[in-house]
Image 1 (cartoon, one colour):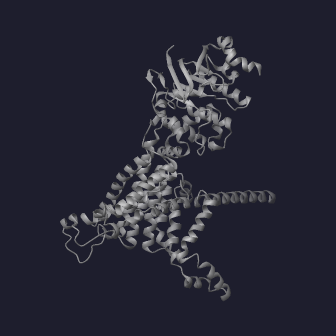
Image 2 (cartoon, one colour; image 1 turned 90 degrees about the vertical axis):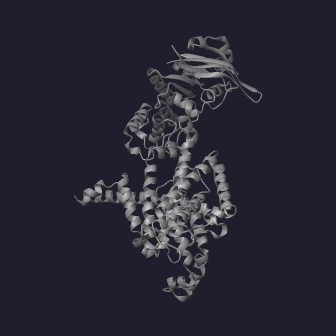
Image 3 (cartoon, helix red, strand yellow; image 1 turned 30 degrees about the horizontal axis):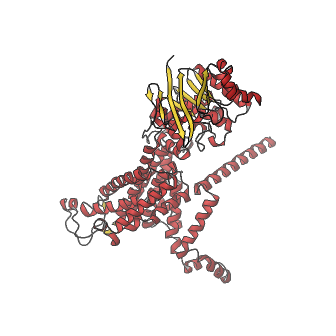
Length: 387
Length: 253
């Protein structure tokens, strides 16, 4: 029985991949416990940035077009969601849906302009447009974005739909919810996790479709594509818009779990972060960007929280002299210094594994398979001898 | 015989250099038409004017009754004119099979089709078609190999398969045997003869006289941007002007 199930199981099949993925994501609060990363806030971040990176990977991983302004769509998604909370309802579903739609409009505009160029010029154009959007959000558009303070909920917000449904006046600010389910804590994580699974499914479908193959071919040889009979512009623009929509979804979810939006979410450092995540994990692979998100968010939240006292606790099984020595070296790399560790890690990965962590995983599995077949053949030889 | 491609009074200058002067050519359906000429005679320029890479200063290029000037490369491809490049233009990161699947998809899907929810592995018809095209050029055994890892001769054969799978009305071959060993050259000649039996019209630009005389039905000689002679292989062989401009030099060597 179990054997026949295992035989039917193949990573070639979408259903098998999705089953494993969903199981891993939904059980994250359990298997992340030993790493000290099982608290809802961090789990939500994993899921939200996972969606962001999966979307970015559809553009960068498949077509090779490196956008340096993807955080714009994240910001747009957040602003949209908060406005929906302010104007209509605290239910997160309409907010998230509208975030995706508005991000798509922005992606269409920015993509249409930037995709007139390729390579470094495309990257510069996206970066320039993103910084422009950031500065607009920070200054001129203050009536919409509240500029420096950031867009927040207030008790005077109309919330037309909620008041129509007779939610009544509450004490203090209302909280976001999904038909009554709270968006903080684990329920918030599961809400985001469902979207992560959905986003991964769409990405999987695209990777394994003729459309996905054409996108990879554009990365490989765009000139050839033109002479083969493809107009590459609509392919690139559609990929750009899809990845912008993923970023909008991530931004919407960010606001859903914590209803405020600030201009700094659109800054170029935020755009750079998703580039780092994707490259660190392995661009152009399905899982790679998620691994990148895991590593970077883990460092940002766990490594940065370590300090000298916690290091001393780790090393206290050693003699005092040795422990002191180790602490004096390692404390540079944790706490405030987590960026240093991340930088070194990023350098090592880019130099030795240009294909990211996924390349390392690939090398390891090939080595393991080789060892296994060697072991098998050795055994069969021994059997032959004994007979 | 109907005319597939008609080039009328085409002129092209680069700066002060006259690359093409009043070029007239008619390509008949089902024929293999060779364009020969010494280096710098304007052969590649002429080809580039046909496929939309260059726009001639004056003159017209008519393919199947359609004006081709100013058209995008992908539009020209869908009109039925396919080019095989001199330096292999393939997708080096993809497998041989995928390299051939892509032009097959172009033929079926047109210049743009958004189908992200179709499974590539379910496209059995395209897959079989691609395997047949690879078998035609003798590469079906290596269909899972990376296209970047195969030899130059194999890359050229692969590109030929990429052109053939689209079943074009007119195939433009830019020096299909340049840089190939004699053995590979003969294989390519056999392959091109096989295609000829299918009735596909071809233009071949070539230096190698062995290739030209074993394949062409009709030869045009280009020298310094002008067509100096046009005729059957025998007529060209005996034309004194051609001997002077081109063949004479090679005989002396």
